Length: 106
Image (cartoon, rainbow, N blue to C red; front, side, top):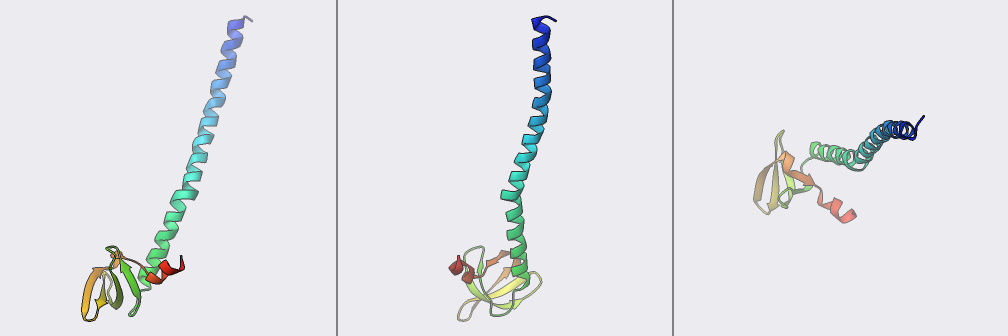
């Protein structure tokens, strides 16, 4: 065997191993992204949907626009909130974001 054939065999075997390490690295990156980005977002969305489905009269809420109010009426698609004495707004249920007491605890 000449020196050229030995070097060519070494580079060919190194390239094959490089392919497997690339695949393993890509899988590890996806796993890290899933546990640090996708899974927490799914958990927050599930909690938000649970909060929206449990809305009832008297619940204090904050809308997506930053309006604080108290729920007076709940429909399938909308919520009537009272923002001041006699001032009521009807907003889409999907725009109700959270309970103001959650902000105090965190």
